[in-house]
Image (cartoon, rainbow, N blue to C red; front, side, top):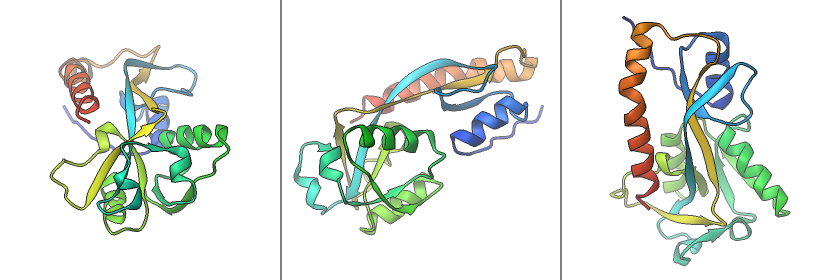
Length: 183
């Protein structure tokens, strides 16, 4: 058996599953290609991450309006989370200032901790609470993303993939529910 873990943005994960490169994927459970289904869907809250001494850090929560013209460190436009947030901001008459575009959350947090912008991230991406250079605040109104285990509807998994998924699926659900309740 060969297990390969591929990391990517929503568009890449969806394409890997749709094309059969991946037996299944974990990703945004919206706007799925024909024939792709999402299982074990969870709704994950988003949070605003900023440098420890940022002016918005004194607030108990941060709104889209508060973010306004703040420079943001963001995921690329083909990220499902980015699209969801941009639409929600636009619905409120706000256009985010995506000044730094990053493909990985770890790099995103490096830029935020150096004061180069704030970010909106899902609960599962929030770094450990012992990270002293950043602070995390709830986003209001609350925004969630729908993520799940993606696979082809008409394709049965190979026995090894099915066995792996049976082990992985409850761990995925436990991990996402624990992270969501952490803040």
